[in-house]
Length: 188
Image 1: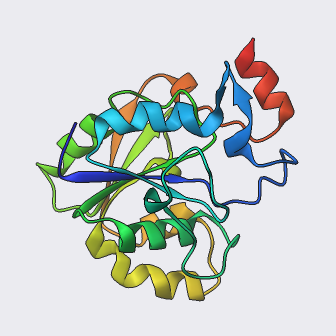
Image 2 (image 1 turned 180 degrees about the horizontal axis):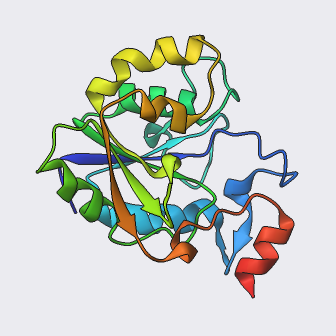
């Protein structure tokens, strides 16, 4: 566990492609969000949950709603997560990736020691995985303006910041489950 980092599970989306709240989908006899929580919590000092509904499985004090317009994308969850966290660095993870790397935070945080970058992002097969970003609190300053400019892509926001990447090799760890077909594939 790295005490200098808190984690935020981004679970505030509408889950439109799934047709039901992805956090509450059962995968291998556990809720999807429980898998993410169980894999993230040993890596960070505290786990927050960004959800626009109360999830009774977790303490209310660990949950927060989007501070800006809800359901406008994960950037609003990142904004609210950066404001809620008590640490300088915040690790973000989506609720629909039950196999996220057990060494995610360690690998990303290690990169902060050799750089002045304010966002560290996993890279897989030449592509960044923006929803898994490790962000410094200083990125909060420009994020609100970016959101109000009606831009929604996390990758676009990342590219406006001083960022670095860290290569990961296992694509299964970053598989996200957007719909019932994705769920069937990952269960097999």
